[in-house]
Length: 353
Image (cartoon, rainbow, N blue to C red):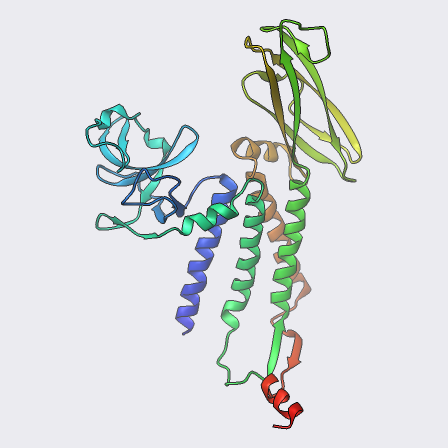
């Protein structure tokens, strides 16, 4: 039984860690699901499947790769030094595979795990994951996984054989500490996530440009000043990104703003030739400067979520060292005696049965 508990804890830990990494890096690691019916009937839309991240695949394998900013799962039909030719099972049989764009090996993140030529999958399980993975919820999913993992890791090895009725409900110090530490990490991450946002503005491309505010001649350029406010009492390190090819940030795109302060940034807009109303967006990412700014900037350049990994590692090391510094062990801090008579026995006594 002890071996099974250790095996279960290890499997859960691997899944939790890979899930958190996948959410932070915005890419599948060990598991994913089909977004469309392109691989039907081999893999139906919504089916969850498993990925071997150590394999780049060969002819006949089903690979997972990035194409046009989307994760795709297709079967390899041909391969050369430049990459792969792939095809979905639903594509017409008379359509040559060579018509599909060639996939580079660098775009492939793994192959679908199969038994023979049949993928190992959980039908429709991906639909539930998709419902949870709405925009803005990735961080909360990652935090939930961390909390669940902390509880499992600290309580998995403490189960003992019990009699038919448990006499005591016990809560150990390390369990409470793990949950409290997870909540500290939650507070740290959410405080930063709440400072993320979007600055949006609109303008018109019109032949009557200049006659009213926000009206510009087609093909012209103009500059717009936008203000970023730090409403917190502590400083944040900000990164700003222009979304779309019509705008660019002419001022610095990374800077620190003290608490209760603000900073203006300058945007240059290239007005399109087509006359209509346009909307532009500037994405804002904020981080607590508790790591060197160069480290945060380097991690941010890979993914906006990647600095959170460094924060989690840094905070975890500190909390682990604090745990050992306190010198507490596995003693019970909550112990509640449960009487032998159950609730149904008490009900019987109250009615005189």
